[in-house]
Image (cartoon, rainbow, N blue to C red; front, side):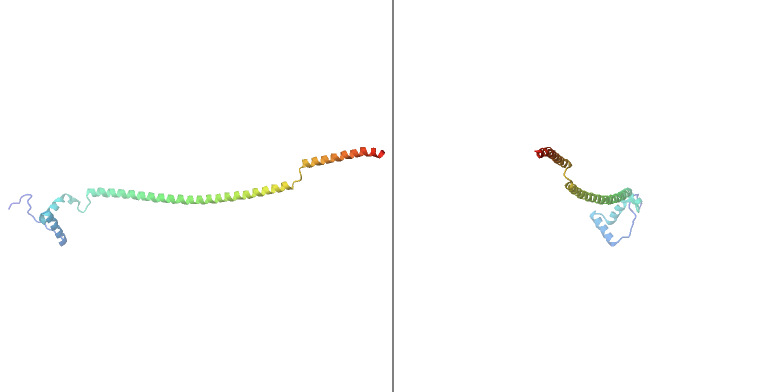
Length: 169
């Protein structure tokens, strides 16, 4: 017998489990081929990929690099998010402190306004008391006194003029 190039004249074998042998037989039956032809076709179909046994395919390597890039970006964004959350917490603490101080100042202003109202009312009451304790207006008192004095002088003068005349008679 002559060896024809490309003729299948050698046998390869490999060890497998009973379950795998049954699965291979079922797959071969579905394709209407013998089990050895099915295995041979699988071996020949994946021959271009033998260089990648134990390694990742170029597409897988590209996807792995892309995944690493996405993971780096994800870590970066996570860190930025944590920093933003920390800044927000710091801002909120500062705002709470500011609001507390503002509340204290507003309360102080309100208390001082109430105190000012009380002092103004007391001043008004004291001014009223001072006005009520004032003597009668000097202008009116002086005018009344002046008129009374003039009246007394005129009467005295009349009496002095008229009285001697009356007494002479």
